[in-house]
Length: 323
Length: 245
Ligand SMILES: Nc1ncnc2c1ncn2[C@@H]1O[C@H](COP(=O)(O)OP(=O)(O)O)[C@@H](O)[C@H]1O
Ligand SMILES: [Mg+2]
Image 1 (spheres, rainbow over the protein chains, first blue to last red):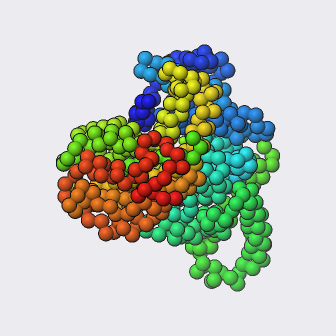
Image 2: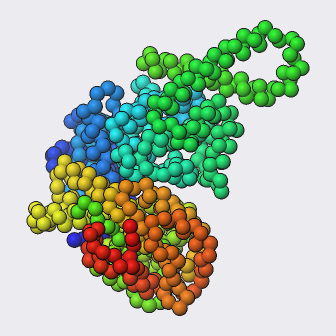
Image 3: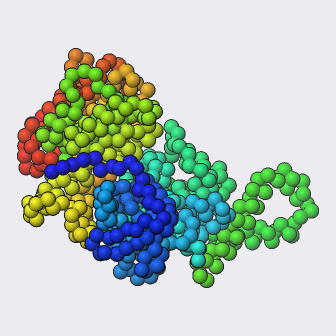
């Protein structure tokens, strides 16, 4: 029995035009360009008989096989796809050794990470609502996504829909999470175990929300829990959702759908308050001038938050119900 | 092979041994006892120390384990990843052995068509989740490690979060080297609760030489004597002074 360390440190680098030939299924692919890399693997855009496809090569063969096992389950699934469609799994024999790969649907769009940087915060609500819907279905199938983070989520170019990528961390309910990223991991923040349960993913959703508002990852301090609570309570983008975020932080949402409903409800509620406030303001302007001056700063922050919420509601309706 | 035990030594060091037997030889000895040796090299700046890196690599190869050299701040995620990968590797090794027995010749998981490989991987995954794990943590506390110890403590607590999230049982013990008059000192005997490390860590004294080889030789003895033969041993064997469930 030979056992050598499995970790290969170097990334797989392929030039455009390289031909990939599958040993088992005898299909040929031609590399077009690099699509992205993560901690485990590298994904290339390639030509095939089926048209454009994405091919993933992984440093860790075990992780690649686990991922394929998950994607296979989705193939038979009804409704919106949960992940990229799986076309082929094969080995490529090169003179430097055999390389495992799998071929999947190419998802055209940008990662959530890029999208957060270029689009307004109102879009984040929409994507989070879509994501919670997908997570709910994944959990029902008996899996927890695991490595939930903006780089593993794509926003499609054609219909602004969020799509999960990278099922390397996807873990059977009740098992221990296979892969995770510290900033989005509740274990890192001292907020619970790494047991695969829906609340594990929902914690990560909450962290994505914080990340989108703060636009950066930060390290934990001596008291990680207080640090996160502080962020939620003081960031004006997060404040309106304080109750929901704190509940996700504490692991008290047990179903993705409950968290989704809480968001939907919150948005309706803020919308009602907002329309009441605007009505009152137009009725009573002169007598309140002096009082209002004092309040300018916080009032201004408040107003901008409300404006964002209203835009979000509008966008949400169009994306969720019209498209 | 439903519920077995995987035995690992997790060596955390920052470089070169300078006393006693060749640590790679002692790691090979551990492997003969059915114990896998994983090595984490903690470096401030890991570009520089070629000899240290080579030694770390050699120990893990000889010990049938996984090695990784990291900068201090990445320690937590690396420790859990190495432990997990080594576990998968051990199980794959056993599964491959089994496959060879059934299919003959040099058949291993990698020689199977992708479809069958997927099925085997599910079995490997399941075993990794349910198998019992015994980890003897061996920490280098020679003078150069002093500033890194708080991070090591942090990483071990993080490892406990990962391992206690598994379905299988875990047992840990902690040794440091160099010891007072011996190669190692036993800081914590076998326990399912790694978080006890938290308290003992503050009392750790650091300083002295780096007898990595003798330290590995020493801790082989900490594992139960009766079930050393196989990489995955079965539960029905009695333990002496080893871990208890
Ligand atoms: N099907 C796909 N279509 C388009 N881009 C993809 C696809 N799969 C992955 N990518 C890109 O490649 C990057 C790395 O892929 P990923 O599967 O996340 O690798 P890793 O397991 O190493 O994290 C992603 O962040 C994304 O930008
Ligand atoms: Mg990824």
